[in-house]
Image 1 (cartoon, rainbow, N blue to C red):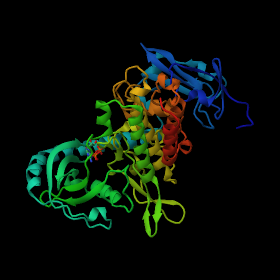
Image 2: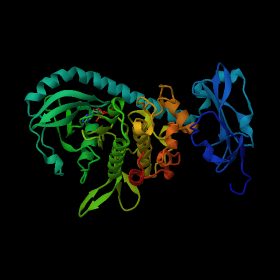
Image 3: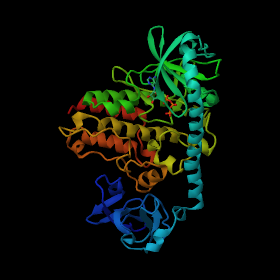
Image 4: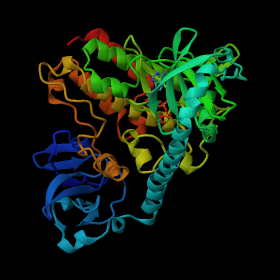
Length: 476
Ligand SMILES: Nc1ncnc2c1ncn2[C@@H]1O[C@H](COP(=O)(O)OP(=O)(O)OP(=O)(O)O)[C@@H](O)[C@H]1O
C-alpha cells in the first residue's frame, strides 16, 4: 500500500469532537490525505428528507474499498445515509434518490452483518427477557425471604481453599435492599456489628453465582481496589445463593456521581483506586507456590464500581468475568468457548467497538482485557465530567452515562454500532479541559484507552502510571 499514491478525500466534520477522523491523515483546508487507507467515507444525516453532510473523511483502516464511487446505503433506520468508496474525492459526490431512502435497515447489511446482529442484539434481548422473568418470580419470593433471613443462620461455610472464604458466617441480619441488578438482589446486612452487602441470586442463577464466587476465591484476590469478599453460601429453604462482601457506604459509582460533584483530588482518588483495582485484577501473579491468574471483568461500568465512605472505589460484580489461564504459551480460557460467550453483558454503553461489531480476534484472549480498558476510559470520563475543578467556574453538567448526550438518551446497540464503530466517535471532551494544565494529558489518556485499535490501548498498569504522574505534576 505504501507504494501506491495516497488517497485524497474531502474532509468535513460537523462536530467538534471529530471522533479521531483528523488523525486518519493530514488535513489541509477541505482535503485530507489518508495515512492508512485507500478509502474515503461519507456520512450524511437525513433532515426533513434531505441529506446534510455529517462526516466526510478518510475511511477506516482497510485494504479494499467496496466501490469506486460513493453508493450510499441507508443507516440507522434511514436517519443517516453513508458510503465507503475508493477513488480520490469520491466521498463528495453521491447519487441518491428519495427511493433509496425507502430501503429497510436490513438492506444495508450483509448476511454476516445480520448474523452478528442476531448474536449481539437478539441474544442480549433474550437474556434480558429471561432475567426479567426471573426477577419477577424472585420478587414474589423476596418478602418471604426477608422475613426468614434475620432469624436464621443461613449462610453455610464455604468449601474453599482461600482464607477469606473460610470465615464462617453464622448470623447476618438483613436490613434493606440496596441494589437490584439483572441477576441478583443486593441487601445491606449486619454481621457482628459490621455492615455487609449480601448479594442474593435466585436458585436458577447458579452459574452466575459460581462464576462470581470463583473469582472472589482466587488466591491473592485481596486488594483495596476490589470489593472485599467475606463469604458465600446457600439458603437451604429457597435454595438461593449468597455472596457476602464489604458494604460500600456510597453504593455504586453511578449513583454517587448522580448525587455528587467532585473536587480534583476526590476525582483523582477515585480514578486511581479504580484503575489500581483493574490493574490488579488483570495481573497474573506468582507468589511462592500461589498463583493468581489474570481476570477480565467483562461487565465494567459505573454500576459495577462501588464507592466507599472514604471516597475510594472498588470493583464488584464478577458474574460475567473470565479467568485467563496461561498454560505454557498461548492463553487458554476457562470459560466462554463460543462466540456467544464473548458477548459482553450488562449495559451496552460500555461495549467496545470490536465487541459491538463482533470483530474480535478469538485466538487472542487479551482482547478481553483491552475491552475492559475501553470501558475503564468511559468511567474515567464519567468521573472527570463531574469534577467542579475541571469546569473552572462553569456549571458541572448532570451525570450522564457515556453516549447518552450524543445519542440523545436513546442508546441502543444499533445506534452504538453506527456512532462508535462506523463513525468512530467517542464521548465529547469539554473545551474547558483543553485550557487546563492537565487537559492535554487527560485527553491523551482517554483517547489512548478508547482507541479503535485494540493493540494501541494502554494497559491498566500504564493507566495507573499516567494517573500518578497527573497527580504528582499538576494541580488545577
Ligand atoms: N458491596 C456493596 N455495597 C453497597 N451497594 C452495593 C454493593 N454491591 C452491590 N451494591 C449495589 O447493588 C447494585 C447491583 O449489584 P451487582 O452489580 O453486584 O448486581 P448484579 O445483579 O450482578 O448487577 P448487574 O445488572 O450489573 O449484573 C450495585 O449497582 C450497587 O448499587
